[in-house]
Image (cartoon, rainbow, N blue to C red):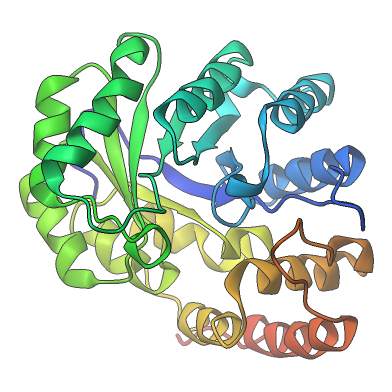
Length: 299
């Protein structure tokens, strides 16, 4: 189990963001889904991450979402983290400040994504410009998702950043899906909260010292993840559900399953430029999920 002095993180939801056909936030659906996720066992919600289409939302919709969550009685200091996902350090810093002003308990900070030929020193400089003003004010989680950003947060870079900002860097979210990378993080930075984004690796990571997860499947089937996130117990239903989702673009697929979960196709739209899945695909994928989740657990 987790060896981090920061304690166990548990099951976090990379919450999907409902929008109308014109891309406007649907705050009623958003807050209702948030409450449902918490009631279903999610200990925290991370807004505007990958599953939440974080790169597609500027400052104004972020402010509106945080205000709506507060009005809905969802305590940001205990429940909410915010994704920080932007190319420029100025825009990333602005996103961070909006989340802190709303009282969020932490930040999930992705590296910049457009320029791919960047080295560790350059990423250290970029992160330092964002982290410096945040020291002593929050907890930051470094977001390693190189298949999306093209910029890897190496185990060595984690070490440099935590040394430079010891009161700020709380952990790493490893969404690479590469167990060797997760294992290296656990070996060298076990006292941080090491989180995994690929649910198929979750139970193993927790057994070997990981602190939990921020993941997309918790939007639709948190019940099959709770034991994995908190006790490191394997659940044979997790891998086939993730595999089914990965046959489609991930974020639209998660939204399609949320639509199926609630019987509400108003969840299907995505924000441009991300294409949405169709109602037919939602029904098909939902039937697959229902069949997987309904399977009895092995004794």
